Length: 172
Length: 172
Image 1 (cartoon, one colour):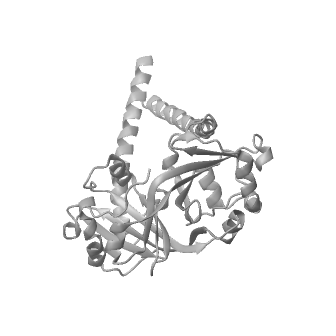
Image 2 (image 1 turned 30 degrees about the horizontal axis):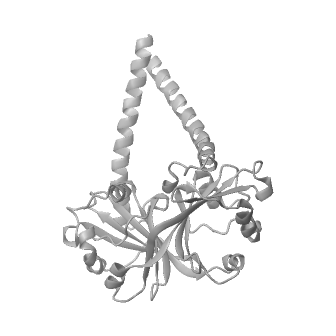
Image 3 (image 1 turned 120 degrees about the horizontal axis):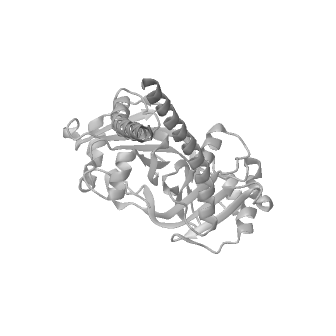
């Protein structure tokens, strides 16, 4: 009887581990399917931070680059090229001065994130996106897919070819 | 026999759920204990993103504000004051132009995160930190606790009292 309980526990634990792995793998496919079906992938806003940046010029935004678990692992391991299933999200917001922060600092110096501008994704699938370096590109405006010429995204990323077409480096 | 297997599964599942809750609660205490014992709390770099900012002037940094699960929930729920157990991490890096990005854009416009500068934490414990608005403050330089006058952190945050002493708003 006691032996059986232990066996049961092991069996349940094994089933548990099995489903976690399957779920995670299915999760990446699901996320990428969602993206190319014109939906923001569930949970992307919870992904881990890769780094941050500010773009002047026409963009005039402040941005965060997030990665799903596959991408974050690749970034942290420092291995190129990124494996299939990697997804990188670039969220951007308008770049606005913060009156409240400036008041606390006693001078104009603080710029924060204003309204969201758009969200871009890079999805690694070396078979599906052969013609664009193994990455699929897409953009969402106000949560809806934008009409963006994918080849334009790619040609802009070509100079970063030696870094698997990624401009953003991981910030510890 | 079959009935027993189901009972076993339920029992194991119940134990599982029980330990997850306990672990999460203990996790927050553990993180806060680690911080005030002079250690960077394990896993803080994996916390979810609250927002980003750029500080000019002497700081001249670009920063990300992350929150543990308790803090992120409070941010998303929009409820003030933040509950005990909330921890907010502010990671900063030097603010540096990116030659590689500028080349791709065809003009100088891109600023990215350089070397890490310091990491600051705000830990909510309304009983322990009564004299500083319910928040404990600390800073780490190069992963080691910095000698920062906590009262100075607090007095700087007083103008944000109406927002529970938080300057950073959540960016969707």
